[in-house]
Image (cartoon, helix red, strand yellow):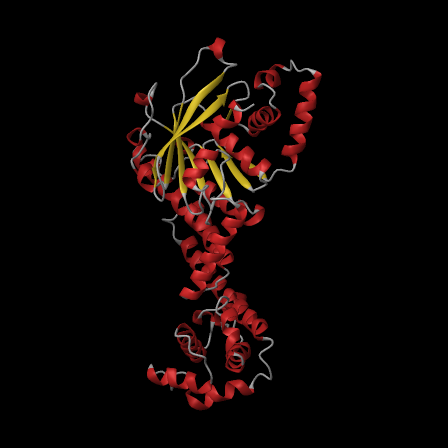
Length: 445
């Protein structure tokens, strides 16, 4: 109890000398503000006087006015905050505190570190209050804690100010890079040429829904995309497998990469050349940055927490979820549509929070059997259609057992794309390997 009282009475972490050094260094070298502004906003300053001074500096920066002591005093005078900021004498004294502006970023990092410590204290106090609240579930508190800490870590508590010069320069640079690379992709390519041409790849912050009837190949399509993303392109990828075990996922991947029929892997009826193919495929898969989370009926809170860890710890750039209908919520007595709506909204919010694409698989209603699915047939809730940025449906005819070794025509129906065109993409289904491929690629071999 004594230790708690001591902590309670402590002054929040801060370093006034570092704050003054930042301000003084900026007055000596105004051009350094362009670097510091990406690290600090005024809320990172503990001293109210220093906050006001830094705010005035940012205002000058936004107006493209080269700041010095007189310009700063004038800006504070116009806003009526000169006396609150310490007056003319305090501002004039700032340049006396630092001999040079060379270490301004070092001083800024000290200020940032102290601000992060204050924010951590605030978060811990908030979580402590929640922990005493018996109306809140402990798992919900844990999820909120991880979200707060992730946000603090991911944003690094910085604010960036962009003017049109920066925006135009960045845009022209991006266009030039695309021209040099001869690619129209601005997101993560799926490996399906027509689809990527239509979407420019899966974009950050987007929720992409892949719907189909059972056994049409939703998981096979996701694995086909992940083969291209993680194994061929080496882009870190997360896969939440709520239906299949990780062993089955590994077996399916080896089958499609090695082009050894899955039936042979199950029966063990392999030839020597099959073993060679599997060894080569295993070598390609071994170092692939693909991370499989194998939890049946995974709670939504756990999925969100694990997704954050994958992004922070493994650098994951895209996440697949197989599938929405197997995610459980903390409101089991609610109507199905309410639960699906909560899951859909949470996945969209998670995609924005993590700034990565999330591809979620979903079943469609039974009346789509034998027909091309449409948006009205997404199972569970109309919220999926509303929340998703892209909705794709996988369609192919069911085949008889005797025809299972044949290469079959299939299509991806892009039924919704918030920022692009819709339409059909013709692809091929290789049933022996449970794999989808570009139609043009297969027909040319």
